[in-house]
Each structure stands twice: as C-alpha cells, then as structure tokens.
Image 1 (cartoon, rainbow, N blue to C red):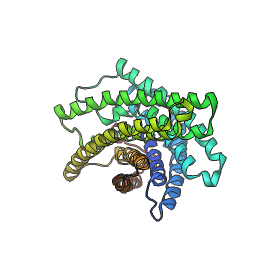
Image 2: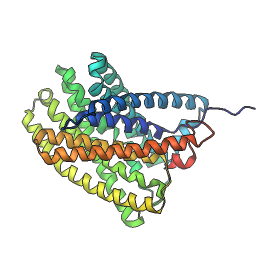
Image 3: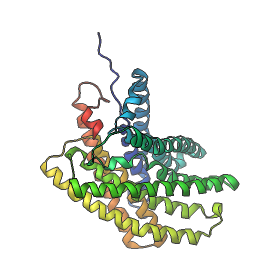
Length: 360
C-alpha cells in the first residue's frame, strides 16, 4: 500500500505566518524611516501571505484525512495551547495587509483585513475560553509544566484589540463605538489573564529552573502580551477617542502611563530570556518550531516602542524601536533558516512534524 502524503500539521505551524507578518508591520510602524524599509515590508507581507495560505491548506488537508486529529490535539495539554496561533496568524496578516498593501489594493485591503479580523477574533475568543476550560477540566499536567506556551490561547484577544483599532477609522456611529468598547474589553481580558500566567511561569522558573532545552524559546512568548498590550493602548489612543467620547489627550496619557512601565518590564524579561537562551544555546539547543517565538513577541515590542515614540517624540524610543527591529530580523533569520534546514532533512515531506516539535 502506498504511503499517504498527508502528514501531521499541528497548529503551531501558523507561527510562521505570525512571525513573518509582524516583520512587515514592524517595518511599516518604525518611527525612523530607513532606506529599504518599504521593500522589506512588501517582501515580508508577500512571504507571510504564502505562509498563511500553505498553513491553512495543509491544515485543512490534514484534518480532512484524519478526522480525529483535532480532538487529539485539543486533548493534548502540550499542543492545545498552540491553537491560539491560527487566530493570531489571521489577525497579524490582516493588519499587515491593511498597513502595507493598501497602496496596492486600495479599499480591498480594508475588506481583507475586516474579514480576517472577524475570523481571527472569533477563533481567538474560542481558544481563549475553550483551551482554559479543557485545561481546568481534562488536562493533567505536572507542577513544573507552566511555560510560555500557556499564554498562546489568551493572547489572541489582545491582538484583536490592537488590530481592531486599525479598523476604527473605517467605522462610524454605533459600529465604531461597539468596536472600540470591544477592543478595550478584549485588551482587559487578555492582559489580566496574561498577568496570572506570567506569575506562574516566573514561579516555575524559580522552583524548577528552565526545563528542557527545546522549550527554552517559549520563554520569549511572554514578550507577546506585553508588547502587544502597549501597541493596543497606543493604537486605541490614536483612533478610539471619538467612538467612546473620551478626549484623545486622555487616552494618550493612559497609553503612556501604561505603556512605559510595561515596556520596562518587557525589556527586563527580554534580558532574562535572552540570557537563559544564550546559556542553553552554548550547551546545545535543538531546533524546533518554538524558535518562531523569537519573532512575533519581539515584533510586538517593535510596534509598542514605535507607538510610544510617536506619542512622545523621544529620540531614545526611536532608537529602542530600531534596535528591537534589528533583533526581530535576526530572530526571523534564525527561525526561518532552522525551519528550512529541518524541512529539507525530512523525507516525509515539507510539512512533516515530529512529535518533539509538536510538544515544543
């Protein structure tokens, strides 16, 4: 009997689309216009679109061929949290399309973003509710199991809050008000859930140390809700005032009072995660799809720092945004190179994923 060419496609493959989309968005958002930035934004937007299409089609083929795969993944406490990745993949690419491709696509870019925002938000809210319910009722995990991956299902509403703010200029009346209030509500829901989980991750590290080398890159996921929340309050300050009846200056003040301290903690965590990653890499850190955690979380810090720079005019924040963008490019290069090398070395096909990559 011929061997089936349909191979497992776990949800963390959507991290490729997330990490590539955020490079395009970050290049567009930078407060300092450097030579070649527009070309970088266009190139990564196109690559992200290809990655998203491949991930969607491969996932559909896999789930159609194996009708029990979805339930199996959701019942696995190591895999279920990554169902936040498909939602964020849709949301991230929608935002990149609106920001980068609007000169080419015109109003179609708005329509594409709106469709992807609705789909990504619905899926993201489903994972933000459903995965914790599964964790609280079915999953069995050890006392040392807390990891950055636990943040994946609760971060999508924060991404929806940030990307939804970009759609506010295209809405008016009750629709704009509803969107703005929904964005602030999703910001709060995701931020509070992230606080709870980050404290558990810190406690696990203090009591059980870093754990398996393959899972160390997931520490970078902590940066995601931090940077994205700074981005969200900044974009809402820019666009939500008329919709909620609050002066723009008040919202900008909140964005700064919230954003600067949270960015400070994000930089602290970046230093901690970077040091642990460097130590682990020297000892031997095998490639896994978790390497894509070097991209999207750092990208949210780029957009967050860019928003703070725009609101303050601070040269230091300009430099921070550019430095973080350089780190993002390095992270994307490391993740992409590792992914290509890994795929070339597998006879099963370009979407083959061994169990250790799924669990990482």
